[in-house]
Length: 145
View: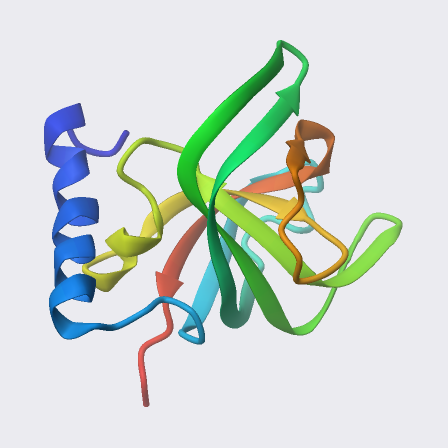
């Protein structure tokens, strides 16, 4: 959390209200991802750009402590250039909120802290494996020039 819990939820809820009132959708919006922490120190600080392809909710997350159903919004992003991480290359990543209130609608007002997962294509998976999480990142909409 960045702010106390109740306050940290406000930007997400206001952003969702703003999106509903203005009828704006996150899909197609250009984004920037800044890698803050990863398993590869050379990857830290890298900035990735792309656009939101799909927003989806309801996924099973499988990790070292078992499985859990997560109903928070996750986002499939198509990157502008090929991402090479260790022995994998892809143009597609999935981001999910690291904290409550750090979902995609928060981006209409500020940035979000997200987990970054590798994926092979635009179709959201039925489950996310923590083994595919490569970084903790800051996500924000790219400002128009």
